[in-house]
Amino acid sequence: MASSSAVGKLSREEFRRQKDLDAARKAGTAPAALDEEGRPINPHIPQYISQAPWYLDTGAPSLSHQRRPFDDRSADKLDNWYDRGAKAGPAAKKYRKGACENCGALTHKKQDCLERPRKKGAKFTNKNIQADEIIHDVATGFDAKRDRWNGYDPAEHKKIYEEYEAVEAARQKLREEEIDNQTTTDLAAVRKLAKAGKKEGKEADLDFGSSDEEDADDDKYADAADAVGQKLDTKTRITVRNLRIREDTAKYLINLDPESAYYDPKTRSMRDAPMKNVPAEEAKFAGDNFFRFSGEAPEVQELQLFAWQAAARGNDVHLNANPTQGQLLHHEFKEKKEMMKDVNKVSILAKYGGEEYLEHVPRELINGQTENYVEYSRTGHVIKGKERAKTRSKYPEDVYVNNHTYVWGSWYDLSSSTWGYACCHSTIHISYCAGEAGKEATQASTAQALLASSQAQSEPSAQDNEVRARIDQNYSKKRVGEGDVSLDKDRLAEAISEEKKRKVRGDKDDDRSSKKIKGLQSGSRDVTEEELEAYRMTRRNAEDPMANYVDSEDVYTR
Image 1 (cartoon, rainbow, N blue to C red):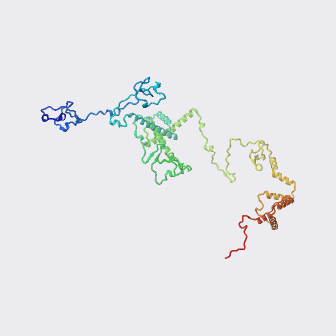
Image 2: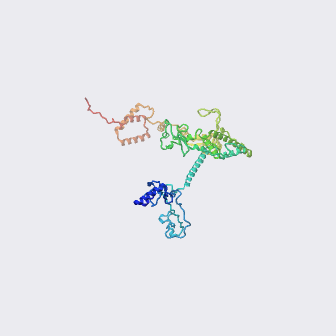
Image 3: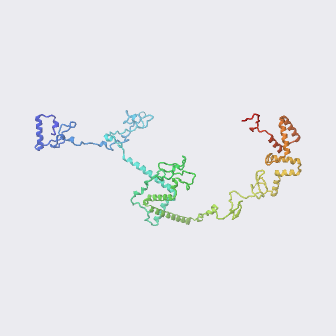
């Protein structure tokens, strides 16, 4: 039955013999048929299994079409890739025909050259000829052609880990430096105290002892994870609430000025104070940075820095895992640090001396503040207590020259607006003091004194008194027609009649000539109160809307 497919169409006699042979093979009286590899074929296998299809028929009895064919998938492996940048031996020294005109390699043409285009190619210069590349014949299968990671070196992925580890280490170091600048804990002091502790014989000190043989605790870095409901800002390392209470005013609504503090909507943080003119203690919200450095936050930062430095030296100190231990060790560390400071100070003073220079002046004397009670009057004089001494300047004070008893600038002359000496009223700098005689001479040389002396020499007449009265009236603050005016009725009536006569004449030339004649006759003439009042009473007000109104005989009647 297995060979029927290979014979083709059989005659009746051949078909009968084939049937008898198959029956004998099944009965075991005839040997079994052998395939191409010499292995016997079970005669009890059905024909639809033993018979090969037409596209796999080899013309001989076989069961190879039922077996899984051997598939060489070496072409689909990741390591089956060409070597990038491999060169085939040393470079040629002379240009070869058919090589690249740019670099001189035989494995590619000028249009496929990946080297920088030269001003003059290797074909013309025969210089700097590159070696030939190794051309790999990589036979890729269906999967290898479509594998996006085919040819990728897994060792390159280590660089990503190294880069992230370097960034994390730099960030950790920067964070330690920031906290170190805000606190007094430094690594040098820690190492010094560690050496001192070893000298004292405390080998079992958990804080400063070496614990390199202890197993590494991976949980001590769990504090880097974000807490529930919180988010860690990677830029400023500030832990902020991710959600706010609904009753609270939103940070971006405190100050609506776009030039105010920046609000980060992603982290809901506002680092600066929104109201710059309000003190931080009185403001409703002073910024996240204010809360960061207020309260016990600096102490927590000191503890965190101490835990990091202790962990860097191999000690099992973790602030979140065992905060009580970290706080006790930090307290012990500070005590030892202060003790070491005192020991160093005493040893230095004992060796070099100079303890007297370390004594400070009391702060009360430095700032000039005392508890002495001093009471002053409204005029500034001391009523009770002792007045505080005046602060002296760096310039020489109370230096009297040329027999003066006062300094220059102690007196001001109002008449000449100059400074002088109060002892002699002299306005000349570095002049010799004349004492009271100088005061009398200065007083006598004033304009008022000279005017008074001239008046005393000549007795004033009635006409002079009248002229002086007019002068005083003209140059005084009180003007004609101002203040309380007392008018003479007879003079007022005469002045009104004269004013009406002047307006009736209306001749300006005559008026001028008359004024000139009167001026020549009387010398000088001033306006009296009665004349001014008469002018006011008789003048015509052009701004009056009823000035030109004249009653007519036509009267409206009902």
